[in-house]
Image (cartoon, rainbow, N blue to C red):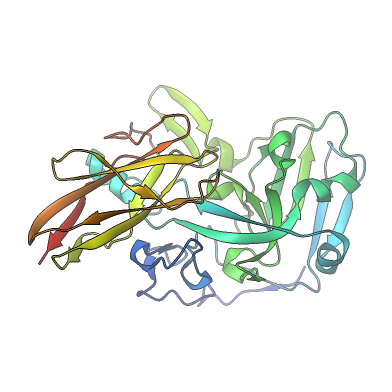
Amino acid sequence: MHTTRDIRTPVVKPAIAALMEDAGTGLDYGTRPDRLPGLLTPLDRFFVRNHAPTPRLDARTWTLRVEGAGVRRAVRYTYDDLWRRFPLVSLIRTMECAGNRRALFGIEHGRRFGGVQWGRGAIATAEWTGIPLRDLLEPAGLNDAAVEVMPEGLDEARGRRPMPLAKALAPDTLLALAMNGEILPPDHGFPARVLVSGWLGAASIKWVGRIEVSDRPLSVPWNTEDYVIVGPGRPAVPITSTPVASLVELPWPARLHSGPQTIRGRAYAGEDRVTAVDYRIDDGPWLPAALDGPGLAGVWTRWRFPWDPAPGAYVVRVRATDEHGRSQPDTTPWNDLGYCHTSVLPHPVVVT
């Protein structure tokens, strides 16, 4: 495998401040909530979460290996094999980092968490085109002992995270080759990445070069030390689906002109569907917002409500509810790594 890396440019695409939020690591950039033009997030503003600089991989020499004790034979695919041998499918899915809103989580508890200091922008949505992972596993011959499937990346961090066999075989778990109708960009996993629908973004391994099918549960840092919910007296529990939460498509804090207008936003519930969104201005009553769909599991739902404010300072709160009746809480219980913050946010707005 031939890779080259320019250490001066750890991320390939321009991270323009007008479109993206710099998380301060040099590797991680969030999507600006006030720069979301439609259901899909354009590639130039789709959030980037890297654990190491983006590798420059050559598709002409890249290969994907499927191997392990859970298959009867090891198989190897070239980039051309993926395009020529398998039917491609396209589906729309939202991706969210489990650490999204970590900086706000820290403010809520009066303590700064370690890790990337995300605001609200470690979430975005794309149309992903690729091959169902089960179609790539089938030629290797899954045996009766197969338990877990673990993709592994070719970046310096060697990102890897196992998933149960049932999740790997789900029809909406893909090896993605394109997003939003374009070849997968380098920062988003070129030549190929896994898309694990509804799960935390860390499960959707980028720059995949190997897929292990195991005959036993696998323990790696990404499901034992990181991307887990852990706290005092509690064992580490790996994160899978992310809980229901919402965001307002305004800067934080926001400044608006007085008069009639529409406030818009998104709500997302991981593997579940968003079924309701309510809003509240200051200490007023909770009122229902209108939902604009698509109302699918694994995809954020757009919402809106009309507002005709007079000049002054306000706090806007939004509360989303999923199909199981679970709503955003007022506060999120502490966990040591600052993951899965889902509290109703007091969004400050000044109207002039």
